[in-house]
Length: 254
Ligand code: SF4
Ligand code: SF4
Ligand code: FES
Image: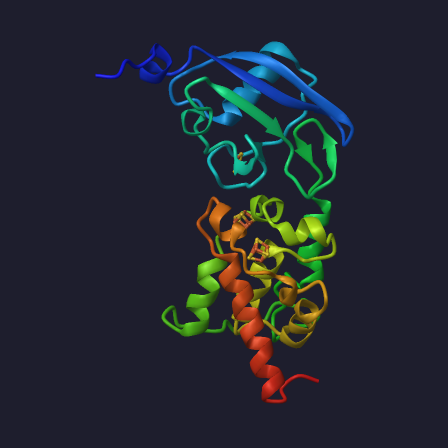
């Protein structure tokens, strides 16, 4: 029977954690962190900041997978860190390498600047605009949207996005073309294209049809593979492409 090491049986006692320090220019610093049962990657970062280096910059809020603020690059892959257990990613030797999210400017250390990410939501017309009240006034009556309708189901499939940026950091097209709107903004646009209460459809479809829009997607599905909420932005983007195709074929676009 093959012998197993203590680390393989019980896990490591200490984690070796390399953490990015600095801005775009910077380097890794290594820390030793006691391993704990059920420890998350965010727990490790918080321990380093509280016990070893109070100057370490990082971001989190909810710690339960709701706010989307804690995403980082963990051993080369974008992940939400408050719901990523160390035991799943550190291997038998207990090694972690932490960087800020890719495809975004670095503020400092592990904090990426999300401004370009959310600017693209605005460019994709990712804000709900009520049909009855283009000036922002409260509509007089509520629309009734049957839960089983096709459009409601299409919108529901993408609505749980928490804006974590994991898909954006995992998308090769974003890294080649910084203008590309990216999976989350296009996913958001698709939920609104399917929202029968929304009154900005023509502008939104024009916004996502441009050079930086859905036609730039290469359908590699990294966004879908990495989304921690198990959403499918690549399917949403395919939906936008289909919609634009039919609108063009049927002469519904100006
Ligand atoms: S499917 Fe499109 S949006 Fe998603 S990662 Fe690939 S290229 Fe990016
Ligand atoms: S689509 Fe998924 S990975 Fe992308 S921002 Fe939303 S929750 Fe995060
Ligand atoms: S801290 Fe809110 S999703 Fe991780």
